[in-house]
Image (tube, rainbow, N blue to C red; front, side):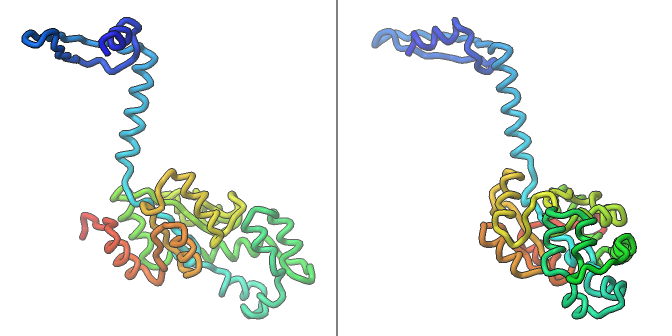
Amino acid sequence: MWESFTKMVLLGIGVPSISICCFFQTRPTRHLYLKFRLKPSRSNSSSISSSITSMALTNNRKLPILLFDIMDTLVRDPFYQDVPAFFGMSLKELIDCKHPTAWVEFEKGLIDEMELARKFFKDGRDFDLEGLKSCMRNGYSYIQGIEQLLLALKLNNYEMHAFTNYPIWYQLIEDKLKLSKYLSWTFCSCAHGKRKPDTEFYMEALRHLEIDPVNCIFVDDRQKNVEAAIEVGIKGVHFKNVNLLREELSLMGVDISTDED
């Protein structure tokens, strides 16, 4: 053991610069007390410093991480009222005559908006694409009480991410409501080619965040999406209204208090 330790010292193997006291018994009745100060090489010292910094950042990450669905959880979805009115038809009529997969393909980033315009209706009829985008933009608004909750979570230093089935038009929401003040648009279906409730989409989010599922909370207004989150170990909350969401987050240990409370 002593020879190995001596070689480490002579070779300058990088260990933290610390004082080490070694106590050796040389004979049954006599003892030898040695004190060394080891100084690491620059390269190893830098490596150790980086590792310590990385560990500190990980340990200081506030948990849980919050994942939010966007439409009808944080933001009003104009599809159910505004869009049918734009086309001069009822919601049922719109659903009956629109292409069955075009919007899903658009949400997954498989087609662009020009292809969407060509495929939106089964019969291929033309429509005012820019007018539709303007209609949707005008219909976006925060769900009542949600912005105040997001602000409280931000003030309490929670990490928040969008986890949403939506096309590139999420940028219209951002332009109007500036959601990025509170969360990151990290997980949009159009960028990942996957949609909820595909469990692989949830697993991809966990891998990206480098987080255990038990340290993650997902909020969505659709029960099937919440169930998919629970299936992979994420804590799921079915959104009904902001007051119930506040209660459920509090029960999960999330601090939503503010100086005004």
